Length: 121
Image 1 (cartoon, rainbow, N blue to C red):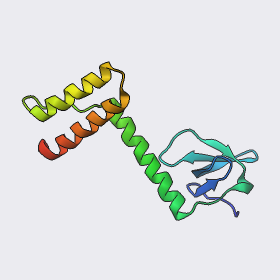
Image 2: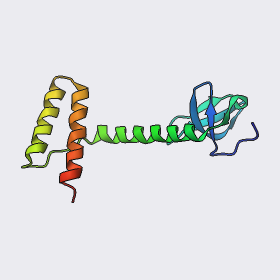
Image 3: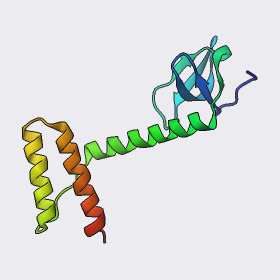
């Protein structure tokens, strides 16, 4: 591979990840995950340009991780007086009390969808 430019998207076969080239550190190339995160060291001789498919996949993964992080910190709140909101919030609370994370997440998704359809200003 020719000299890498900062910001180039490359595939690291050792980790099977796409990374954004940052710089060299001794004999290693320093890569950062798409969307940010902790850098890792890679063998510069093993790197190759990321394919369009690999770039897209890495970008979608980063977007999904951001969305999950935002959802975990801000669960949707029911709108007072809305029967659907109250039913979904009750379903979520029962799931939470039973330590059923999957059902709790499902209730959050349904409540968020309901908010977007019925309560958007």
